[in-house]
Length: 227
Image (cartoon, rainbow, N blue to C red):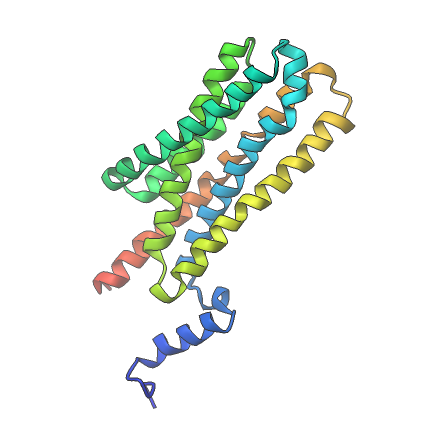
């Protein structure tokens, strides 16, 4: 019997059953899995780069000698620029493609975290954190849409939710790194620089985003009926 009783082709019905039964991850094709992993890693490191500032804020206040108002302003700058980045990369991704936009946003927040580690003044730190926000907001705009467009309809909602959940993993990673770098290792008052430098790790996901590019092309050919 090649079709379900509802007239749905057997492969599609089987996929829907797999998703409904909680085994939707096993229902993903290799191409779909690569897209989800690339976008999820990007969002996880996005979270890590944002939260290491929050965890290092005590050291920053002591090092640069600013108060709570300035600390709050620095965090606000990142969030405002994240909103701008989300809006901007929504348009940019339409023009240059989701995968390329995802690559760019990952590089932006990775490089800007490294840049923040070199800050010699509060102004420099503010500039780097504001630029980081552009990549942070742009990553979600690019990655979430890439996942939504690349996966089958019956798996799309679950995959997008799974990508969103990686934000919590990034928070856990940030806490672990901050505890190690700020409190365990004998790095003195320069420890926050090391922590921000570790924020450059997301660049390692660049290769993962390239895998997503291959996956997206494969999916496009499949949908177009190309051999």
